[in-house]
Amino acid sequence: MKNILLLSAVLLALMLFSCEKDLPTYYEFQGYEFASTDPNGGDWTPILINSGDEISIPTPTSITSSEYQQELEDLKLAIRQMTTEEEEAVTYWTQNPIVRWNEIALELIAKYNLIPGPNSDGTYTLPNPTNPSGPPAFPFAHPPYAIRALAYLSVAQFDGLISAWHHKYTFNRSAPFTQDETIVAAYLDNIIPSYPSDGAVIARTSREILTAMFPMEAEYIAEKEAEHLRCLLLSGANVQSDIDAGVIIGDAISISALERAASDGMKNAQAPKAVSDSIAASALDRYGWVWINQELPQRPVGLTPLYGKVKMWNVENVEDTRPIPPPAIGSPEYNEDVRILKDYADNVTEETRSIANFWQDGLGTYTPPGHWNDIANKYIVQYKMNPLRTARTYAYLNMAMMDAGISCWDAKYYYHYPRPIQTIEGFKTIAGTPNFPSYTSGHSVFSAAGAEVLAYIFPDEAATFRVWAKEAAISRVYGGIHWSFDATVGTQQGIDVANYTINAAQNDGAN
Image (cartoon, rainbow, N blue to C red):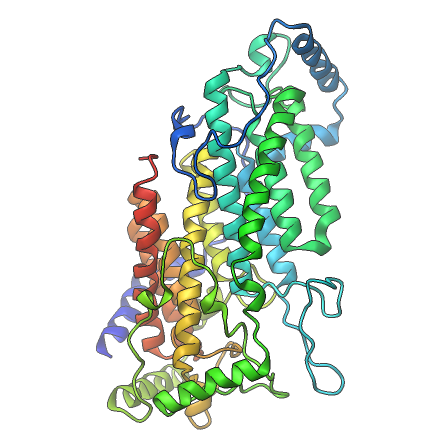
């Protein structure tokens, strides 16, 4: 256990500044010159569909046709009549609106990350997708739900843009502001063909996926889509037929994504009490221990006991990623960890408390996976990624973290290991105790997987991401929520799972 103490010291010395950094969910940026335009992006390997040409759209009319010329006139009229509010909206949506839709997704996750409380009689009612208004309202956007929503959103966006890029460079229709010099473009000319509109693909895909995941927000999400589509015209980047073609792609890819989601096993993740009790009994027979929820009143079932059986993106068999068993309770390794946790609890410092609080990402927040999406936002803008590259970054980031979360939950309920608060007499945490078993640490697994993908995408920043992941892991030990081996083994588990996704990324044709 000396290694964990050394790791703690190194992190405090090197990364204390990260506890003070501000990670907003809204970035102030406008259009920028893309670092690359990836004209071969339509040949990249998609995830949900077989190829970029699988989705068909109409052949566009000639730019000399009367139909297209009328579209230009309609566009110019719309720009002349633009209101101040519309001008602000155009600035907001930028040339890379995927970042904006990601921010919207994070906001919705935080809004719905509220655990249902007990009824007056001490019983609990679970959120029900067939009655989303509840009570309690659906969904409870806990970390497994949050990362699943982000994964389906970003994978659909990525595949939709591969299709869009295929058609863009097949038809090569240039943007309206290059056709008519009286049209003033809102953004820099990045010389990407306008048909179909990549923005429209993103707007429609985002609306469909987020509405499915957050049905109570359907009206709000539809308003954001309408605003986004309107801004594509007002920016001078697209005529209406560009947008209509993009919507066709968005509709088609959303159907594919939601078909997969309907059959991925998530609807069974929150198992009934009899199944949950059977899982616990199996662990007790196998190892002689069992996790028991410490809440009062006690919830009858832990959070999503069967999430470990949800379909993974890039791992064929979740058992291939299951870590070694945790230390036996009462063993020398276990007793050493008891000593470590007691020492942290008895000697809380401003630094360790700050680290624990910074990475808490608990109820009412965008959860640990959302935190890593927020980190990605900053670097996507900093490195001036085009929309296709942006979608690719989010897709691999969120697939890796979803696979990592599934692997983590498999381990949690397979080993059913008690948390420190259960087995250390009189022990208290400084940050609450989650409603699921301890081993391995979800924060550690999510963070390590996210950091590895971002290190692959942004190699110059790799060391920073990896240190942040280790800081996120140790934060749960500082908080008394996890054993140190939950964090160290979980970190390696996240790395191992992420490598499956990175291998897929290395072979998708984008490098």
